[in-house]
Length: 477
Ligand code: NDP
Image 1 (cartoon, protein in one colour):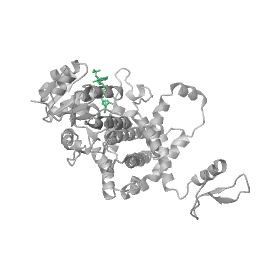
Image 2 (spheres, rainbow, N blue to C red; image 1 turned 180 degrees about the horizontal axis):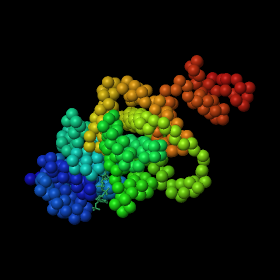
Image 3 (cartoon, protein in one colour; image 1 turned 180 degrees about the vertical axis):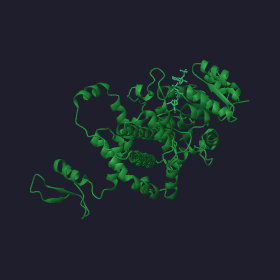
Image 4 (cartoon, protein in one colour; image 1 turned 120 degrees about the horizontal axis):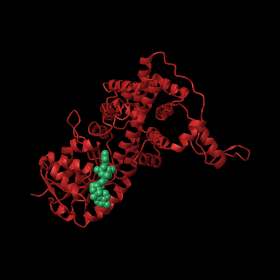
């Protein structure tokens, strides 16, 4: 019998994705550039379902039902192009190539265009959930032509995570790069979420002089409420971990230099191009960059000895609750901004993305899975055209309840010198959105002064310029 689907690239992700297909009853063709990964998959897990292993790409393609569906799960970038090149020589019109790696969406747009010209369907698909998600059910974000989803959709939905109500965490996001774009923003939001949790931890630790294990208990408790999410859950696990070598908390022996593979940076770059303020994601990405500026940090530590105040915490429980509320409010801001970016890209590229669907497919399987996503789905169900998530009645009320706490936490952080870039910039964003008047009017005046860039008036239609270097009368431009 021929295979219904094939996976090439059998490192951690591809191997587990192939097993997931097999465990769900699909016959899976498997291939890896270096054949030993294919053999070890069959040896270790061959009994989990029907696999057809091939050492060459030719045999792999020949083992697939027509129209063929090939999932590529290799290192993003050059390797993906190399595999696509080899495959295009072997595939026929109507076959589907799915790139399930973390491709940059502009690469996906280029690849789809090239392959469409050859009669091949190309589906750039985001897959989130890491190794475990790939095996047990990831959140899947396929882009590409709608017609390919007719064949591909049911297969992907079957292996995807399921939300509590049974809905598959997989939906056709939109054409060409839409799937990879949404996966990129998902990762950007993940950066913001992680940074916010990090800031909450730092404030609790410094403010209350707590040990990591004690903070683990606080996070575990938060995980019972509105903040319930995978990231909060694993934060408690990480904080509770003791280092076997030293007996210290593991978090205290890990170097405080955060790595990044690029999806946060891509999200911010795209946001700059689209003109969408994703301040939470940007602060999180820059915070990782600051953490890695080892030489600068060492130099600054000795010199920048600005005096700081002490924490004045009379009510321990009150402070913990303040930090929880600040975390929740900042998190709503970060998600609202991420959704704004998806909407802007959808308009820019004509993708017609349904925002509520994004929240739905992130409810399970992926790294940012959280109870809170149900609330976002509800918000977009109530009003698909919400100008921002922040004005949805549920979220605006929740933030209104917590805004005092949010301000106290940001103020405490500033007074005591604990860096809280994502907390404070999220609050500034919130205040900017709600401000009656912004100093942008002054900026327009400055721009008109030095560059005759003109301005608009609040009272009269039209475009105006003041003759700054002349008699300073106003003229219509
Ligand atoms: P890696 O990103 O480490 O890639 C290794 C795989 O790529 C191996 O199968 C390797 O083959 C293959 N490969 C590399 N170069 C080539 C080439 N020129 N031609 C053919 N094959 C090549 O694997 P992961 O499983 O970690 O990730 C796979 C993809 O999934 C990546 O795009 C990644 O960004 C994405 N992803 C990863 C997640 C994770 O948690 N790890 C989560 C979500 C997405 P060989 O064995 O022969 O070297």
